[in-house]
Image (cartoon, rainbow, N blue to C red; front, top):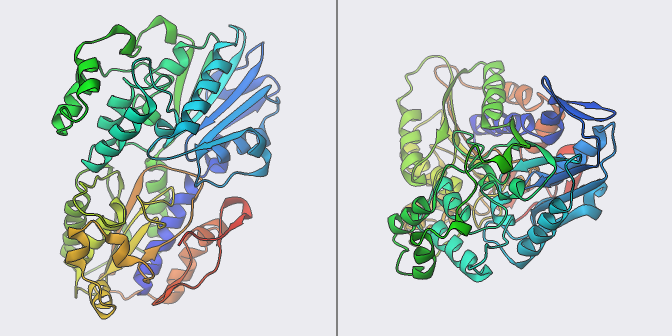
Length: 479
């Protein structure tokens, strides 16, 4: 790979560092009675409960405990299996499957709902929500069963459903989503969200467990029909069409939600701002294209590759975007939306010098692969061909990881401890070739950024035996 690809890795690392729990929770002021968010105090006279949900939950929970002047009376953490759990919250952490829910998620959700229902009006709950919590809050509403939720989730993912569509359905099948976690709790709530959804709509993040839901049963039915799943899940569709009142979610303005306040803790805007600053320090003219990147991954990848190729010679340019693309699965390969986006971009970049495209999930996990994504340049297709790999066949079979596995293009970070959707970085060197010294300068913006850039890879795979995560924890990379 080229120094330009190394630069893209360093810029990604800076983006991920900017949305670590330790960084984001500095926005809170910790008082002897609770916390202050901006001009709003949250200092309950009764018990203080801390709940952390999602991919960043262990880090958020551990960081809150490390800084809190008031010790919480109870802590509840729920995260996916793949996430590293600090020792300080290990005893209060439950894990479950993601993105397809399982029994452990159902049981943990039922436990959480029971705890919250048992609180009193003078108590307070701080809820720290990050992406991935929707699949974890897996307890179904009466009339649905766990297997239906599992199979419908798989089907929607396979049909390329957007996160908004997926969560619209979840909010009408699950007992803790769409405002129900708050409506069933008599205590006051302060929810701080780490967004992984385009547009940062708090009602969509983690399926909005503590905020009113503007979607309806009719909207959920429309998703099933639009994605061609009405016949396969006829019983679910019939329940939606019947508009059963017990399945409808609490709406904005519902009096049961008056005790609940929701604020944005962080999003991909923070990540892109840090990426832009890192690129600018390296001499690039940095441009943020969008924070709402959506669409079919391979089409977006081809478009980003073409955009990188179209940049006129001159000053180095960094084009930055964030969001969440989708993949319509037609093959039986292994991969994820970022790997597929990167592979599609590589075909467009083939033979074009001084250009690269990186696509990666800020959580460090892309689909069914062990990678966060990939970084590609004009030599990627040629190097793949030399290893006997066919990019067109890999895209046909949704096997982008089969193409990138063991290659220098693979971006393997392990779980990063955060999650603000995906980041796409396109770099054009312009008329000035990049020097290795410039790459090193950016990679050392912070010691954490250098570590989060991911293990170095060679033709036979990553050569660094471990990945160091935020806080200095070391873990074996996932291969």
